[in-house]
Figure 1 (cartoon, rainbow, N blue to C red):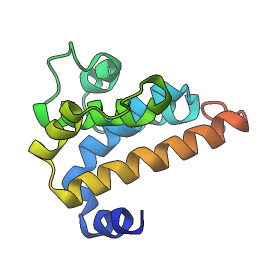
Figure 2: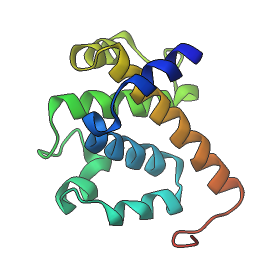
Figure 3: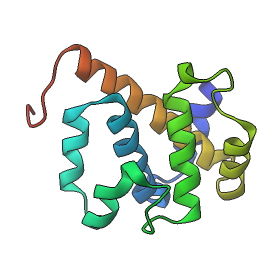
Figure 4: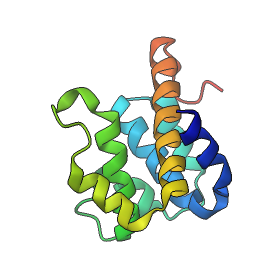
Length: 130
């Protein structure tokens, strides 16, 4: 875990800013965190991308690299839904597009988003409360 954190810090956040925003939104959608989903309204990305991230597999607005990150985000968020939480095919696709630092940054973003989603849900933070 310390290694993942260290690697993620070495990656400039601007390198993956758009992808990280999509990952944050998708994880928040899965977890039902209205406060985090509502924050997508402040995005500088196109409305088409932000409104179709829940259907990213069918949407034409995402690159293969972003699709790999979204697949990893879904698998890592839904760990209890499968006996093979992050199948090799998903991991291998992520390694095609992201080096070790990029994967570490993605994993940390997914984990942190999951933590904050749970804190917001448990404390019943509604959208727009901040």
